Length: 535
Image 1 (cartoon, rainbow, N blue to C red):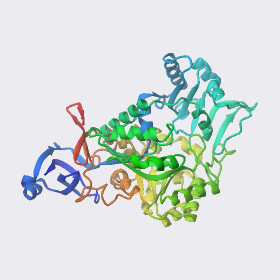
Image 2 (tube, rainbow, N blue to C red; image 1 turned 90 degrees about the vertical axis):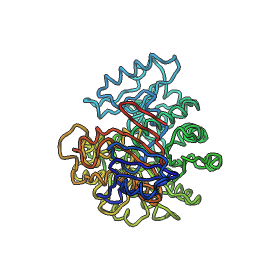
Image 3 (cartoon, one colour; image 1 turned 180 degrees about the vertical axis):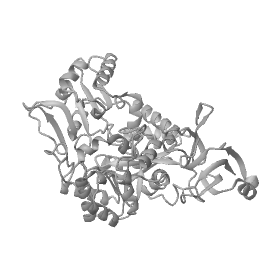
Image 4 (cartoon, one colour; image 1 turned 45 degrees about the vertical axis):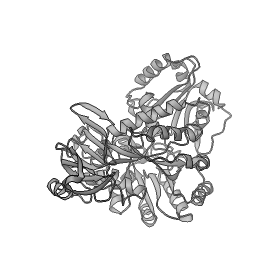
């Protein structure tokens, strides 16, 4: 007994022009896709349910290949600074938030981005002291590789002028050697350790808020890394068990395991087996981000020639981590944005290759001809974030210079070379809406702009852009034989929009509305006549 989805345009994604108008599903899997008449004749009385798509356009279920599920929920329920376009606006928001806090409470905020400010202002610790009236403050930059801390926060963490930069981090100092409050990468971890732990109820709320939002945006699943940021690894796992081990929240989570959480995770993994949660590769950071100039480059930054970025691990330390993953027969998933970080990671994979499956390179922000040759020789996939094009240009041209910029977010080149790519958002660092990623991959510009695009020769077709979030995300976890297409035997995960994003004018992609999000053949989200139903 099954369900017939009918009366729509259904893109199977098997190839660019493959579509039909109906699909029949039983027990969470696709039995057959084809014409409505054909399926009714073939399956007759076995069809016990019918969903009228009413002219909607169905695609395989979109999956975000790289985000932070709990972190995205935190962004939705905490002070969000990411959309602020001036230092004055940010200051006002911080002051308003401070008014709601007790005397010793921490003021925490997400997503400040000085590149959105005309003056590119970065707040000093003394300014934060005044804004927060002496409270401890910790504010994450949009990239989450730079943080701002107040004097009280630095004091509680024990950071003084005598504190050395930790491995993989930078404590920004003034001319007298005093910390300014700006912390890069692992330097911020010193402060994070003294921030009071959030409650289990807070984690549950953040995850549930995140999942409901993602379903409303047409996402049927996501590959996430959450297990090392909230105290003992069992705390986020409890949130996943509470939120996703229920019939009411159908969303498929694939969890990477940060190397610092791996040992604790392995001790309790058997207690946290869930229908909608699966576990994947060991996560490692190799460098930082372009925004804070901590992405590790082979040559200095064009706009700051005194630095080439930050390496998170030395060669031997990285090799030791990879060897540890291999000892547990695990693949690795490594954050690499700069080209030097990517070179280091690929050399390490060559020295200590995976026993099976594919390793994951997350971001691959800057490549080269030699890097591409190496990528083609190794069993790796790339988790790319098309939305970075919309957020990082045009200032990225200043960072890298015109000679390197053609190799930044070089999606067209990577696909043409046969390298498997999956599409993600890196939420909460970037907006999670998959339509923005699809648009950015195809248009190579910010929403609202009208030029031909940043490095337009790297544009993808719309089919390829959607493919990043369907068969690309499936391939990232070795599931391309059961997910990512609408064909017989595949999982019945679908995203249905109110318009054909392959055919509408390109800027209209961003106006598409999600009609249905369907997971295992069941409606997880439905929008009807301006009302929303979430099952």
